[in-house]
Image 1 (cartoon, rainbow, N blue to C red):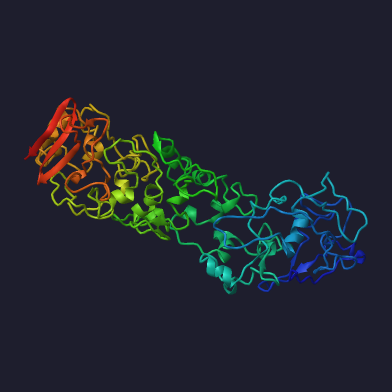
Image 2 (tube, one colour):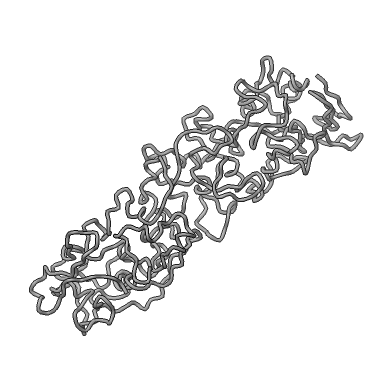
Length: 552
């Protein structure tokens, strides 16, 4: 039953007084409000899109003092017999069932299956004007599919709030947000059918999403456009269904602003159309998990995004409060580092089915490659193993830590020196690299062909790569033989389960399409023999190393 408190009554005796309406007295309102001047006045004097041909009584379309259903408050409409498709979402802890109580009353008009003039107290259907029979098409006609509408008719109690930390406890709800006698949230928790003073019959104004925030405890964001729920969400007939988004999927919702046409919003749409990009256009499918169902919200929590910067490996504020996978492979509710967010798709549940470069040791799990116990790795989880890297540019040392996004980013991003948005959205260089990195054999060396490596490593000068300070034949291989850096080096790292300190130090993991086994010994390997020295067993560019020694 719904706890409505009508204090006026309509009857045949009051038909001449059309301005008299059913009144609602809300506990937090001092004024008495009237339904007369709202779209719910379906009488002939009504001003809404649906009104009767000649019926003068206002309240009769919902209430009658006699011959009504034995349902409070003197309900005068037939209850729908429809079986509804109710809202469902993987993120929903509530258990909505078929509509009950006040919600079912509302649906006796708003599902579009029962004529507006079909009332219990009349033998004949009240005729409506302008060819209207049921509620006209539009946002008020919810239909029988409620899967794209805010859930109703579920118990909102302390147990539910305990499951979902983002819900206000029932005792903390404002007095205007009323649950019914069964402690169920109904349409009337948000809508007052007799008072349209706030628009859409809302019980409170929704300025700054005040109504939404009465129940939903959202994290704080400093992005002003993200502070209004209605920017992204739609309470009824939402295109997405689950998540109640305005777009049919998460990406289309985000890109409605991040499209290059909205002032102040980064143009992500352009980045996603680059040669190499994250494919975030997955439909909302709660049966699939990442990396098979990737969308913007896998990396960004729009409710808690912040502005500002961070220092590696701390998570950048633009991610917000987002889940991740830690260095041990465990799921974490709130990632504290950038790499934990990346590991959701690029670790044990790898989105990379096959590596771009065919190597002696194959590994697609970056968590194992970056592990601090790995044989050799770029310093993403922590400082690297090698205590002696003379080619590092000023500002970087052997104890420096870098972000995944220092290498994987838009080549037009601010981080790359461009004017575009920073982030792993898209790039002109595969695989989503911030700068060019040629991996094909016989690539001619230049500042641009290995621009990715040269972002951190000096190309020439006293300690440059081409001055052979760490390996006496760097210049010969890269410039003289046109061998790419990737022919010998695996940029992520080599896990301890697959490689060894003897054979895979200095990120050595040969490209099998360029480097072949030594025909004399059958070996294809590098051996570390000390600081800046080693030997190779291989065949490359027709030259046999069986072995060849390198010492500075």
